Length: 281
Image (tube, rainbow, N blue to C red; front, side, top):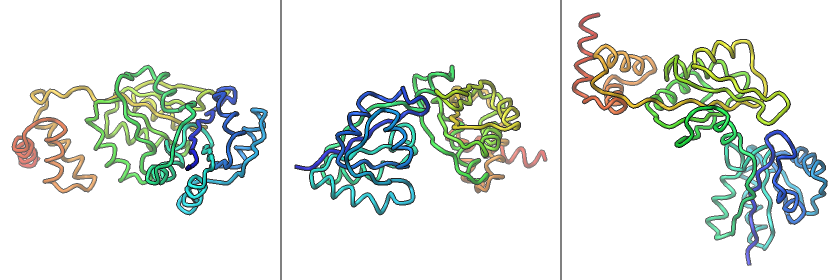
């Protein structure tokens, strides 16, 4: 019989938030694969347990090479526990490759549900949570980041992003430019920790606030786009949307098609609006 892969959620802040089963799994595992073995040992000590199985590192730098080794252990009957520094494995953390490889080999997989920065931020944001999407980290480069956000401009669901402290101001400004200065959002930092803070407001206001510096682990929640009324969009607004995409590097034909798709306005009308704007200029 093959072994069992256990994906375990770990605290995103308070150690006492750890699910009771986490301690049990740390003791039962034949192999503990940890994103950071030092953090894993500190967590285990805080929970009052000493893992008896082999402890190995499993992080972005060695994920590709170590996955086959862990799969072989599972095929040999081992119980493998996968933990990350905080939150659930595979959610912007190592784990996806191992899960995919285990599925391919017919290995049993289970999970120990635990704290999630995504769901915690959603609940605290005060924004609609009936439908949402998780976008992870935005691209580091400004041009790529802007392009990705413009693709999300018409997304009706509430959006959740992760971001680092040194990029949060730039990301919020890019969001304001692509999604609108007045789009409601919330910046959640240090969730469940001593200096937890949730700052709510329009994107432009949040970007100005972030200029003073923001520390800690950050999750950003942004309200989805309101339903568009194609008849309420002026030719000037249609031309502006095309121009924004062109400035970002899209060809005019592609920009016109994208604006037509996101607004519901026929491509011919968008094209006529662009021509009219060009003639007027």
